[in-house]
Image 1 (cartoon, rainbow, N blue to C red):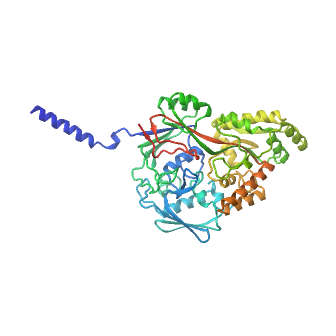
Image 2: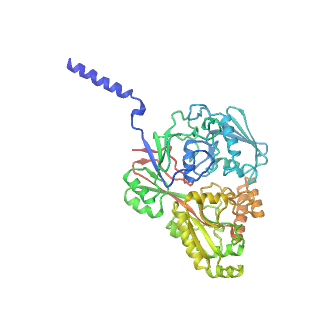
Amino acid sequence: MPMIRAFWSLSLVAVLASTLPAAAQTPSRLVVGMNADIRSLEPGVNRDSNTDTVIHQIFEGLVAYRRDLTVGPALADAWQVSDEGRTYTFTLREGATFHNGKPVTSAEVKWMWDRLIGASTWACRAVFDGRSGARVTAVEAPDPRTVVFRLDRASGVFLKQLANIQCHVVAAHPDSVDAEGKWTTPIGSGPLSLREWRRAEYVLLDKAPGYSPSAAPADGFSGARVMQVDQVQFRIIPDSSAREAALVTGAVDVVHQIEPQQIDTLKQRGMTVTSAPGLSWSTLLLQTDDPLLSNVKIRQAIAHALDLKQIAEARNLGMAEANPSSVSEATAFFGPGYLQWPAHDPARAQALLREAGYRGEPLKIQTNRQYANMYQNAVMAEAMLTAAGFKVQLEVIDWATQLSNYLNGRFQMQSFGFSARFDPGLMYATFIADKSQIKTAQYGDAEAIRLLAESERTADDRARAGLFAQLHAKIRTDVPIIGLYFNPNVEASHPRVQGYRPWPAGQPITWGVTKR
């Protein structure tokens, strides 16, 4: 009898254990170390690279980039182009839902689009309103699963702009805003939903229980984004050495911004270190409207004063070579012609300064310590420019201030970096535009604007390659910007993490990743 009672007691314990709610069990969690906090959880507003990372875990666009840099399905599983390239009709995938349980329909896609295009602060507004590309004349929702975009002319890069990671053309539910239209809670349709954002500490995301993935295979940000862990936490650890220590001790699982100097140490400690060619571009921005830098001979002198090869080697330890162009080696458009640039020649720089009538006016370079590459590039540039006869002042400010200055054109020179663009035309579009209309434009030359517009209109890659080559030749002469190199994507993970690997976008992919 006692044995029977013991059996039933054990059975009862087993039944109770099997029926405990999931919340009582410890969730599996992937922890990603980030160098800085995000800026916003509202798509298209106040973005930077870390913000892009989190936004694309919560939200989905109609289309997205694959690992090979082509555009594939995301929230839309099919699309058609008609009306001589001026009409794009997207079919939303069946079963997609928002994190509040409501179905994704064309009405919400249109609602979010209208919100973005109506926001003067949207960084990508110019590429959709006709100032830097084709103009979207209408977005229609003829039935719940159909979204129609109408353009004023054909565009060879419209799909690429929709997929552009920095543009945040995503679907969001109107419940994301309050009665006054103020953004309050991000409600997307992605594989993860927001649990908590503790500023300067972490962003914690939960696996979305009702997520219905694409039928297409997982590929970059495209296809089925199926989570294998219950939670993802993006933990803010500003210091690179502290991030390294957190990885080694197991406090974090992945660090996706590894300094080249850390690679050997991490490998010796048993961490998995992987790399991929990069698409994010390290540059020196020159404000061509500045009284000093409006003189092309001064800008040419700067170009001759800088040893790009030395800067790239010192920064990347041989993992990425100097590249003064907007065309990354990771793209099919790249060729040796894009490496042509004014040679490092301090004597020639000094001669140009004399011709320009330079009298020791200060040359101020803005930079920050949050991004080590920007700071190190600025320090090396300062030394080289000083050796060539410039009077240089290094202005080290916080990243938020520097980004604000960039967005408003408040600088003379900046050590800066552009996030990954998957097509050279998109990178050129970040700095070629009418400077009187777009404050972030570095190069307002009418012929450059025309060449960029022509490259945007055609889908013929051979023709586009020729136009990009012409653009680089003009930039090589006028020097409105100085490209340094494309940052390699170096990432590290703890041995217990399986399935994590980098890609040219430099954005963490958390779906399909498991922990032992």
